[in-house]
Image 1: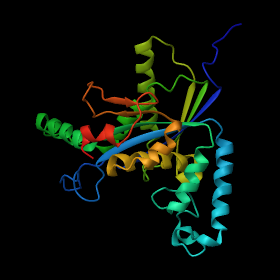
Image 2: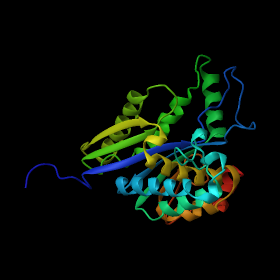
Image 3: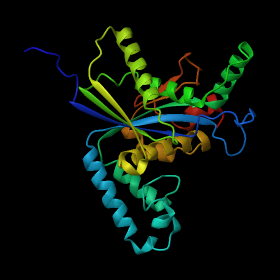
Image 4: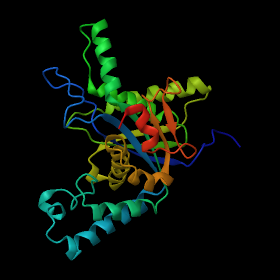
Length: 279
């Protein structure tokens, strides 16, 4: 038998979204971190979905059923004119009853969630230190986003002949080249570290969440993770934990300088997070 044999399935599907935001300063240079309305954490996560077609079909069926339910008849977020649940599931906008239905659906499908988290207080301290060293240095939120892309995918771009990566679209700027560069860097670093040959194509695509229901699914996982880190509420993440692969808390350096990895052997909960971040 000749040729390079695939390591895993022929095609792998990754769906990427964020929670919080990478912004540290307003347009006047004033610090936003710690103020009301500014997220304390920025996190990026992806879902590795085994059967995207089945998940898409079931999510469409669920939305149709909920919209036809008289119980939700006069709910504002369920009206087409609102552009919320009637268009796409979004955990922040959806009713608690809707969230319960979506979470239950997600747990019936084979998928794996991975995420990386940054504490923006730690990022702010780094940015201020850089500015002291070089007055011309300017913090760019895209740099933080791209650094999380590299961390998130560092061990996941060698598992198939083709990796189809769908990013939730961020604003109007076309960042396809930047995302491709970030993915190229992380795979090259992985190959150097483990002395492996780069295999398999990867195709990054940026879309709005309503265009791919799988992006709505990863939004739900990130919402559950964000509720833990921002509010100390762990029941949502606990419910979906069977589908979590790993969560990398970069700025929890109580044990190592590269942070903490939470996984099946080391579950993530409020008791684990509070000592480091004080939630």
